[in-house]
Length: 367
Image (cartoon, rainbow, N blue to C red; front, side, top):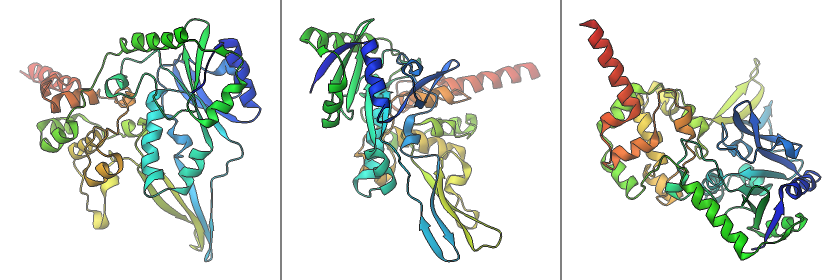
């Protein structure tokens, strides 16, 4: 591992050197929110961001992509067109850990050539998070605020003017040579630890993960799922904003003469009614409660044979809190975990409490 310290102005110079060779994706401010997008100027990069609206998984798994074209029996595969190597600059630990979980799905037992091609084309420059949002809880599940692996370079702002830069791979060791700075001292490395400890104190939510998969398995018929199903809108925003949800559908689009068309894949969501629909209109997750349980349970480590085979019992959740932030009715996965572990009663769950309060007010007005 090589570690350097440099001023922010030198970090900007390093960024400009990267621009000469790579396409750079970075967090960028959009009104009062943040998003990952391509940037061409260091001044556009928001290194003080909390959480982006959507995760950067779209750069590995596009929301929609063509797989092949067919014309009168002739089939042509459509491969990803990657002109230049990409750098994702300033990715937080939660999203980086999400990449590592996606790697298990798409690179381990049954590699997806499209994913592998994009993943190998991507350089990751991570950033220690110092401004977690109110909905973040990565610290409690070990996926933040700084990554322990999976990055090529890691940036940490250790004081107002200086960044600590550490290499985490052979690629990172080559890139760090482009940084104008001095070798980091033991004192400066210790400053990083102080920054991390200060950041940990800012988290307002947490999940205690011990035995969660087993407890969910024992509580598949808990009344929590039924009540959440009554509150939930099945809009799917939580799934679309989740950095580790990877389900997709494959569809054919034909022209009117039926002799040509395209086959494409696009994101799908277990929260949507059509997701579990099979032949003749059968649906094995017709009730919203079953779909709530599937999403929450899968993220919290339960999900049957496939879940344990792919993730070895790990949580699929990385604690980014986007599902909490985007839910229009206030469903909170940390509260769900607390109920399953017996730390909180169902009536204390915010989304359920709100609906029970509203029902109570309506009943009172009708008397």
